[in-house]
Amino acid sequence: MAKPRGGGLLDLERHFAFYGAYHSNPVNVFIHVLFVWPIFLTAVMLVHLTAPFPHAAAAGAAVYGTFYLFLDRRSGALAALLCFLCWAASGALASRLGYSAGWKFVLVAQLFCWTMQFIGHGVFEKRAPALFDNLVQAFLMAPFFVLLEVLHKFVGYEPYPGFHAKVSKMIDAARKEWEETKAKKMS
Image (tube, rainbow, N blue to C red; front, top):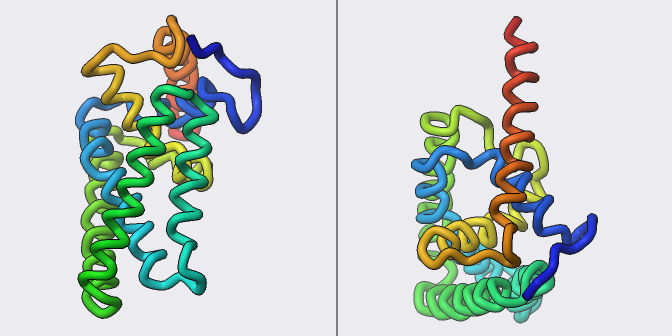
């Protein structure tokens, strides 16, 4: 059984609560579940197409996968596998399409997926995306966040017993603070 870690880079509770505070609307969460991993896949594909050295895409996917493994061994292993599959699929797709068609595919996919993300935030969440407050953390945690959401919803997965209850309280507190700040700015 995984135990909660202390603060810092490997603090899954803090990362999850930060990201979760921006994703409380179920429609927005569903949009993220559908489009975050395709954003990751096509970003890795772009690296395949443009990187100055041949293993840059593998290195990037490995960094993500390794980070997720350190956050939580069990779900991190699944996330690392998904990172590897995205690397393999994006490499095959980049090879098949070539540079000219490949970058166009990436551009269309990224524009569509990001548009859906912003619609999710603007229309359903009514809150700017997390990336406006912490770009690195939002990009790094988005794939893992949606994976943990799916695992929790469909199989009741928790990195350790009580994780979701504890993080839900942190998310509620962060959302309350944001709503109070927003109300003060409007008055």
